[in-house]
Amino acid sequence: MEDNVLVDSSWFIQRYREGKDPFRLLEASDFDHEFYSCGVVMTEVCRGVRNRRLYEAIRKDFAVMCWVPTTAVVWE
View 1 (cartoon, one colour):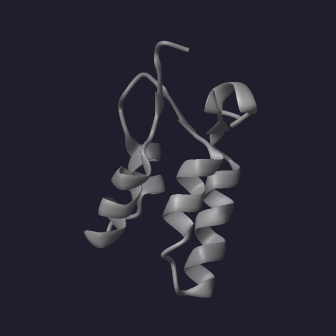
View 2 (cartoon, rainbow, N blue to C red):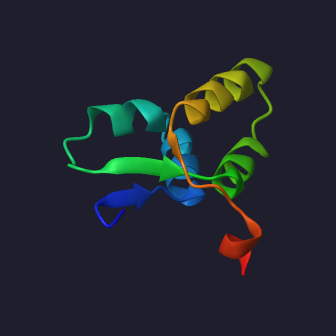
């Protein structure tokens, strides 16, 4: 998993503030990595979304990302 990247919520949030779609940026990336997310990142990104349609679109985009489960071991 050393060639993989867990994308932080702050990166997603900043791209939205810039008017950019972070998921499309990840898709267009020429990095030779898999991009991962986790429940904490998704929650942090989604918690500030007020537009229901955007919220649902973000959840759908997160659903197709590679996922790191946040088990008790991870929290420890």
